[in-house]
Length: 292
Image (cartoon, rainbow, N blue to C red; front, side):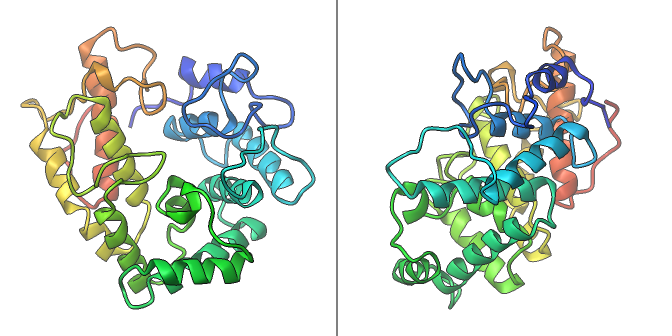
């Protein structure tokens, strides 16, 4: 597989990391300011896509910073949002990003345990019941859910946080609910996941693939089987030469670019093929050998 860890994109992000391990403001997958040209979670998402793991020093520094915020030794500098419970949302964000790189943080795992308890009651009989969700939420968090991020739990953070944290039958029920969710996964893809985009060469297609990548992190074979339709969609959109091309419109600074430049169509296709081939492998789809 092609190596992107030493690309100019990775070097640029790492050069902006602050001494405390952050990149300034924490939250915001699509917002930049003069004070914080890239947020911490933007940087972490991008570095993870480029191949960085807990073995790499920038990630170690970032995880240490997030842990210090989670235990109350430090605070993220973001403005407190008033539309929902900011402290609860902060713990959810921090725990999610810690667990995306490191699964043995006790406090992050405690956050996951609390959310797993809420979701398990909401899906007790295999289907979602909002009244049970609200009741369990009140009991676990000692308050009613407030704001879209909590009234509706299907967001990047909760879906990522609970990857491989639920028992199999509950995980399958959650998967079914997410796949049928009319507005997709908040922060990732805003339409029902059972209806892939018609235009493959689009930013929308890239975001849809991002949602499937998130779900592919669940290792339950029955859950992966539910994503076969997405693998079929990807295969239907394969180029005659066996590669994939999501098109230049997919360039968003998050999922793409991977290589230093897309001036050449060949480079863009290699980037797209690299990304989709990795996803197909996680979905258990056998792939032909492709040179990157």
